[in-house]
Length: 594
Image 1 (tube, rainbow, N blue to C red):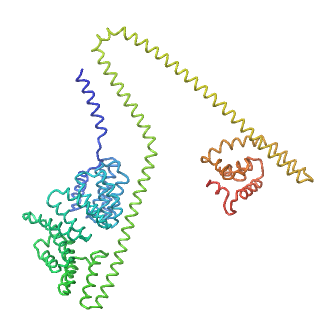
Image 2: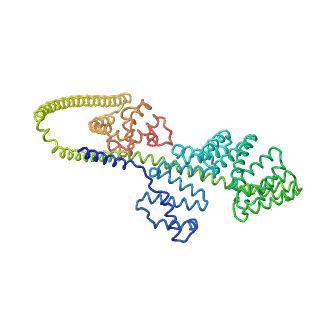
Image 3: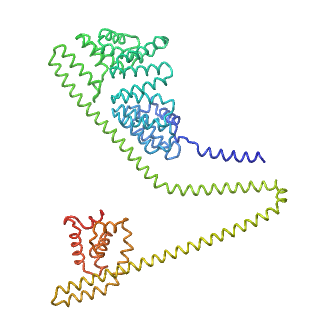
């Protein structure tokens, strides 16, 4: 018996745990498998070798899981990988923003934070540091402990670009404390030294650089050439800045002449050549300045259209070189080239900045649309949840009944002994049922009494409305008689009109009741706002405003009121005057805004 109960409880717990398990609808493993299969089919080294139309054609023919959402996420990941190989920042950013905007509910928290960090990194590359910072902050709440150090490094970089060196140093210190292994520690020390150098804390920068250099000395068997080159380059900049020009220049030359220089990458080579040119220019050494300026130029792609920061820097160095060589004409040409390159670069950066801003704006708009859609679906979800809960309750009820039936065979002997007690319990239940029925009867009587009071209240309200309507009609007749009295002379025609008006009173009363009922079609508070803003209007004038607001034409209103269309137009004109509405403004357009 105990084993059966334990098994039953364990089964329910397992089902509940299975329903609560959070899984990603599209994993990184699936992504790599899909990319690998496409590369094998088309014999590619990477997915970027395809053209974008060809990639879209391939993706349109593939169905990864048969599920629309899964397939959409898979295709977004494919596009992101494609644009990454193409180094297309804007389109890659669009793919990630679309993933976060439309499919975040189908991703794990770790995947969301990872995507947010990568979006922030892309904005950092696009020099939109505020947006980069905002996405880093979004990612921080869900970032895994293994990615925490990387996030702190990102914070340090973005705050250094925002010239907030205090926060930048604080985050790099946190990253340093979380570093595992020599390589990570070298990177953190180098970053710390560089930010302190930017903050003119030359003593602190030197201490960090020396600590990093000691790590290299204690790891002779495995020197990381790139980190070593960056460290030596930063130390050279520090020495040159603090007045030791000769020692700093020699340190740069040692990097250039080292065995590992060819393997450190184009960017670091450009950085080293640029610093060599500046050092030799400070020494007025035109020969060596020219040599390293040419080496720097060789790393640039001048045949490629477009602008870059490195090309702009080349023209700046060229201007300085021609200046120390007293070549004013060449210096002027270099200056013109510098201005042209600067204009192109500014235009390109502005274009990228605007594109990034537009993407982010679209992201937030999509988020708002999703919130609205979720609100609309919330009611439907609640109904479905109620149905699901009722079915689940029924399932548990049936299971419990079956369990009790099975157990009844085991406790038959106990039931026989308790028969008398059960009869007493039955009598108590009957008494309880009688009390419940009596209570329900009392509740029904109370509801009927309340309904009766409500009906009486409605009758009183109707009587009051009829009194008000009759009073209004009486005032109208009185006004017309006063006008006839003042007019004097032959009033036979006016008397005929008054008789016609009295004949249509009953019809107008029915119509007015219709207006009272249908005025609720208008948005809430229309009548009250009219009364507050234009308290001097009569009830008939207010009714006319309601008809106009309902979209009836003068002809239609005249048919209902048993009057001429010209009379209704005259009334509308008088209403505009009475409400101080400008002539050029339509009465309907005016009251529609109320």
